[in-house]
Amino acid sequence: MKKFFISTVLLLGLSMSVNAQKRPPAPPHPSKSELVSVKSRELDKKYNIEKKLILNHPLATKKMKRDQMKALNERYRTEKRLLKKM
Image 1 (spheres, rainbow, N blue to C red):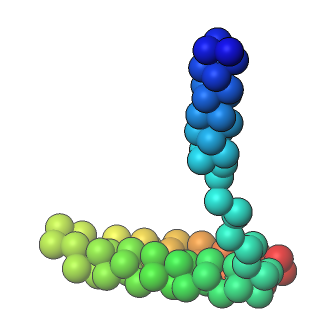
Image 2: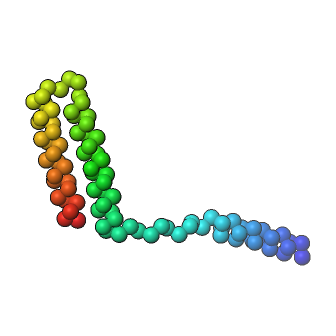
Image 3: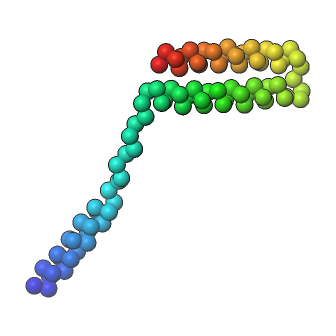
């Protein structure tokens, strides 16, 4: 009887700890338009930061800045186009 009681208590304790370790339900997935808008905002923010860094660089010449801005604008346009096609 004593062994049965101990094994029952042990079994209940283990089952409770297993139930306590279950994960909470996953949050709902964002819609496609929400994902696109979030990615677009991130892209805009990244573009503005890089633009500011290029324009405020103390050692770059005007020609270097112009070339870097040209490349940055081209990359930004390409990524925006790909994002809109998604």
